[in-house]
Amino acid sequence: MKAFVPSHITGFFAAHRKSDPLESGSVGCGLNLCLGATTTVERSEETVILLNGLPNQAPVSRMVVESLAPCPVVVDTRLPMPEGAGFGASGAGALGCAYALNACFDLGLTCNQAAAVAHRAEVTCRTGLGDVIAQNTGGLVIRLQPGAPGRGVVDRIPTPPLPVHYVVRGPISTSEVLSDEALMRSVNRLGERCLKALLKRPTLPEFMRLSRLFATETGLARPWAVEAMEAVEAGGGQASMIMLGDAIFSFGAKEALQEFGEVKTTMVSERGASLD
View 1 (cartoon, rainbow, N blue to C red):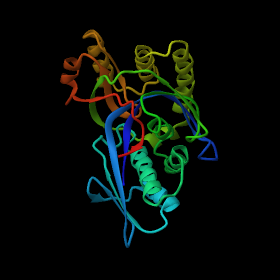
View 2: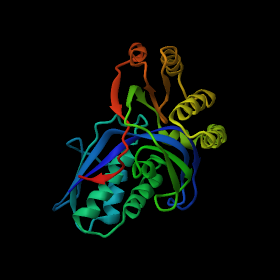
View 3: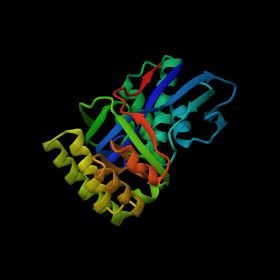
View 4: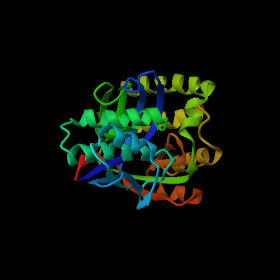
């Protein structure tokens, strides 16, 4: 059985970490992309997790296996998105694993129940807070209240399957940012402000404007990223930083990004996690 999970990029967020991982999460807004992960599961004599064909410790997916698999399995996840650059790779792998295990062993879990197992694993491993609930939904997702799927509250901004351009320079450690208390106080204040503003005008252009504001005012955007955003805007597009990665995404003005690195293009995915 094969599961598909879109990648997810966050424009702005505010973290809410509690003692119960299922109550932890984030509010904010982000995009699901067609650049997605596929995961297959088969019974085996010992549990092995493969990422792009190679054995990997994959602690988030392994925790999902330990929670759901009734016997040893081989989990084979193909991740075409950059890892550690804010595309929700760990959440995609864990969520796809939960969906595939649920189908393979006829566990009888709903989509939210399976996704909650992946969310708990990601929060526990400190690799993310809000990707799984968004990836379980698809589209341009507003995370209104924190928590695992089934507990957190989300809504969507209607968005056509537009092309999204991106440039990745490298990773940013999600755990390091989330552990910096002074930085997170600033991030959370601004993230809550951006969410309130978006709810007054929930459109794609407003999401991009607020994401740009968040990236620069928090100081998370590096100098090259600020220059790239300005170049895209000068070309008539909109751009912002991918949270949390040393990366930029844009709508329009693809040519303006070319001086900042290799430009790749995918599409907005209205499809959330699902079985193929």
